[in-house]
Image (tube, rainbow, N blue to C red; front, side, top):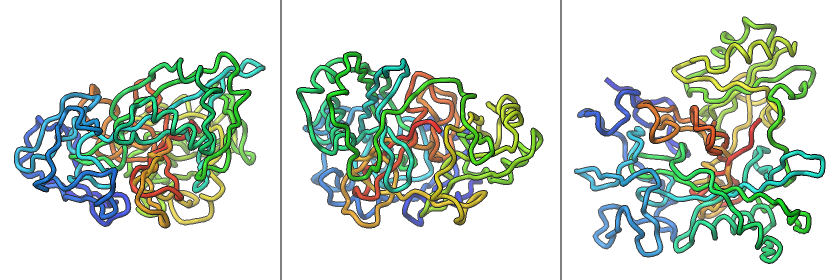
Length: 426
């Protein structure tokens, strides 16, 4: 017997079917499985979207390059539903069929550039943008357009989001020629459905020649800041925040509440605040939270004892927060102290799953590490389990995959469904 999840699919009133962990794989027979079929109206008729599967004029070349559209999955050769003839998500059941907010049947491809350098004082730095709509930090990135190869997408997205559209080809020519692929595969995205899903390629472009010193980095339209951010370092080096020490808890289940977190952590010391950010429209947990202790030693003790602890079927990922929750998430409704949630836009160049109120349905997708969906696990070769849909990094991703550390954030200024940006670690 299955039940419906309380939180609807992004920007809709359609609820996913709850998929038990042991029934995620298509190889497991589930006769009673009848998920709702949903494709957002904003997706229909766009130049970046497919027609309905039963449109007689729609004759795609599945698992191959279909004209200008890449329908090849990085995961495997996908199969099809014998009744609807729709492609099937290679990771398994998600609790909802159709395309949701995604344009293509089958894989929807994206690309994410990580541009880094070593600073004069010896620190590793990388280019990041701060989203204008929610204040979160993100790696520039976007959807691959029809007829575009991945290298073109990487350069275009970086120019649009980190150079305000001003392309300085000569200054960056050498940088783009030395890219190193870090990840190619499935992305645990809250927009994924049984028949449409996100995949990406992540490249690192390391500036070892000081080329970026001669490049004018400017935030794009949906960003308000764009510095070189420092990476690495000791996880215990985080500063106190407002007199408290804040832990960031990733990989939370949608069912986990602030009270649940308090019960897990209050045995280690006095807690000043517990907060789980929630989406502005769906009120769904973003898949991560903050627990703040009055004493730093209590926070460090809690970190050591709770990192990897199972809560609601998910392994917690606990670190000392590099910054507190955004000030615009305080004082509202929601988990803990409440919070303003980020908007979601169906699709544009920024890949974040967000819903835009004002722009036309285009493609937005700047990288914030998209939170895992209730329907997915971290990677195709992981154990058979269903990851709850959350906006935090996918559960226990491969350490080599930057996808495991990104949270996908979307631009309110971009248009509907193509949004998907990843945020840096907190």
